[in-house]
Image 1 (cartoon, rainbow, N blue to C red):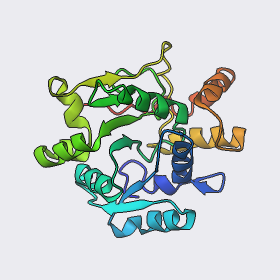
Image 2: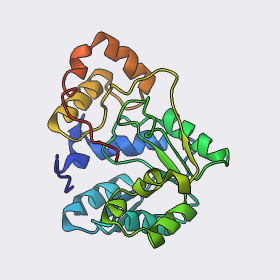
Image 3: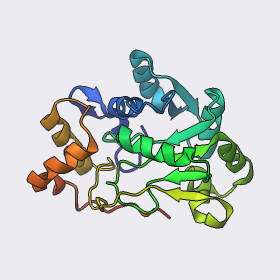
Length: 230
């Protein structure tokens, strides 16, 4: 709830449901996931997130608000996860097909970390990262830089020589699309999309097709600067 650019965005209303609902439900649609867990903080402001999770029957874990790496590691221990799939809670258009592609790449067994964010070809907002609990535990024990602890996987992609990294890409470049929510204009775009479909089971492919006929939707937030990865 304490997002710097758009406070409270995870519970922003979209078609009568909080934004977080769509993140969870679309992630749950990926058959390769055993469980979707919301890793929130122990701050009073996030009591609202916990209330939502309890009302919807969504598993949750409360941890450190600033040391996000520790929160992830503690959450993984809490639910006894062997493999962790990281999806940020400001991506209400996350797609189960793409989640599955990144998991499948990791399952091939030749990498420590699989993602679609390093060589970006998918829209921003479909970001998926997969790594083992073992790697997460190792990072939690050995990484001390505050930036690395705030941005869970930063140490991995800043030290590629230490990890086997696999990038998941699409043959066509869709990286010009911005589907994440950091600003009110981002939220306006997402609300427009959901108002058009009227449900949350559409695919990213359906959306990219529709956007060809509605460039004005993309114009809602195309001026928002993208956060640099590093």
